[in-house]
Image (cartoon, rainbow, N blue to C red; front, side):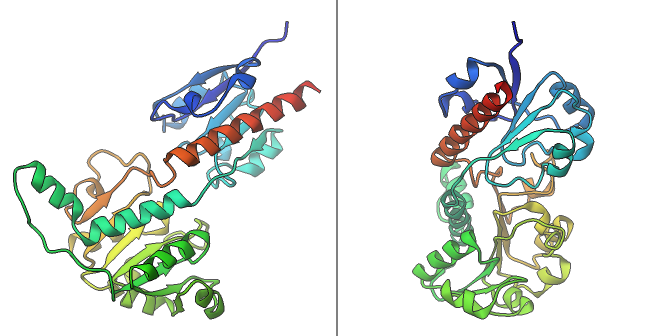
Length: 315
């Protein structure tokens, strides 16, 4: 009798993986082990994953670089949510005969979270909510967004939708990225400006770029120094797009007014990290995609991808 395939579901923080889709087609042919915690130490991770033929990863929660993949000789498939996962070394996987399956997704939840952070920052919602919980009342004066400048760094699928909402709020929308043209910006209802002007003029600057070698650290000390002391920086894209040390210093020195952050260099964000405690930071735990509809799509499509791989394996 052929032994069942061993499947690991990683980083299921909310313990919802097996409830978000019908896994019966997989469960008939594989033993499924769900891990709700996160392991970051490479040796501990390899020890955990060594017994498994298939690994299911949720976005970039657990990266799978070459130095991990090469230590997992039993691994035959990686299933990843989303259409692309930069934290998986696909070249290394291919070299070792490991199939990488992906899923569909949706951008709406990240766009919505972006605006949740913008509005929370503009109207000091966390501080005011905490005041009410603590028995207090009004403690701050918020900023109205209408008539102010929304800067969009990266005007792709997400950035264009964020820009459209900015227009609905009555904001002037400006945009820049390395490949953006004035014509494409105009189609999204934005005005193309140079990089320095984007940082200097924005009352709210929101980042929507793919992480790559070229974009890593694109927002550094020099760019932050151009910003208004009242400006709000929002990042729901990827942490390393921003020089984290430079951002912490800019927030501590009030070079910029505040930041709304859903992504960080190291995730989960280490306990004691200054971005957990600075008064002018609203931090959320990378929940841009953590919503009901994206999860249903992720897990449904992952089941299909794993089932198709099992079928091909049996042929």
